[in-house]
Length: 221
Length: 221
DNA sequence: TATAGAAAAATTGGATCCAATATACAATAT
DNA sequence: ATATTGTATATTGGATCCAATTTTTCTATA
Picture 1 (cartoon, rainbow over the protein chains, first blue to last red):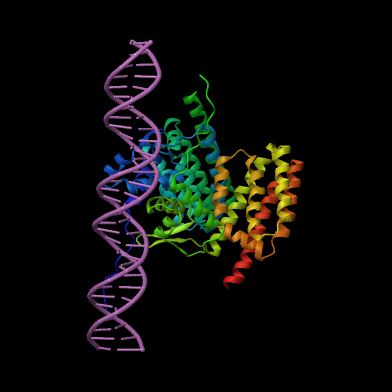
Picture 2: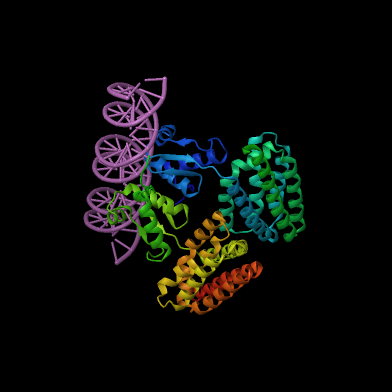
């Protein structure tokens, strides 16, 4: 018997679609901190009932992206300056380590791909794209570590502070500096110097964190 | 105006109760890996409908404790040896760091509390209690770090491998060794030696991981 | 006018019902 | 006997309905 192979990946459930869409909207800052997420309103936007919406909200809460109160509903979760600071500290720790683990496994194709994102980041002028490209640059390198669990935690941490990171890049003119630091990290990777790449990654994240802290303290008073 | 203070903590929703109960059952190994979690069955156990059950399952999946397939249902998630190894490696990294951050903040009361758990761990003969006391000993010290986000991640990582950790303590006679290592960690904390406490914590976790690896490789072939 | 309280509306939590899909099983053909 | 196909059953995904609670609006009163 002959037949064409067919992709039988699971179709996404309504809850999956709603979850992904809301997650994206929240981490990109499309929905402001404190905004209410009305179940009925969201359900109508997706042409579905409130049941899948509630499942999606339940998942978002587990990831700390929203907070809910019984009978009162869900609001986009904001972070205090202290909480943001702590997440940057955490990211510096685990991303430095995952970078160290990745370097020995980096091959030509991966380095070229990272180079592509690195250049794209420098060329990009649309502020909304910086966050996304920045994330892809780092993720591309990290993936070589083969550490799926680390990667999950990196993504999860990034989700929590992504909107703030975008603000840092956009409003503190952090892009040129981040671009230079990306170059240095990539150079260390090319040399196969895991310790250096790890240290530079750590500093890169802590720099962004410090820059963001002064920006936020300025802004919030 | 005078009025009596009232405790206004949110009553837990049905989904909260189901989630917590299932989480506990899974991490303690009360439900075996691969076991099906039937929505109707669980709903009846809690005298509720399937709606809160589905929310609870959705949350559990986000934490990696179960895996679900559309129209097929949920099963308790197992971990490959490689995945377990990676989580131990991750724990060693972040718990060593959170221990280092905790030491400068440790006060007499916290140290005494940790001492209590340390002694209780050594005295305990019921294998089912070891995991719980072990967790409390570490958590008590970590909390002094004041790092809520780190703590969340520690708990989440522990949840994933708790059942295996219990097996390691129980079946590899890991309790005496863990007890000695707890003593050493506590001594370093008493001395205020953050670097030493951090290093010992790291070794403590990596030791348990290695011991578990050989046990599992033996067992699984 | 301002305010306390009651009624109304809005919103969430949960139960029941129906549709979509998967699994188990029996009937049939080879 | 074994494989295959059709059918019944079980299970999950989602829609609709009702109950519990909160929020808003209205009204009476000082």
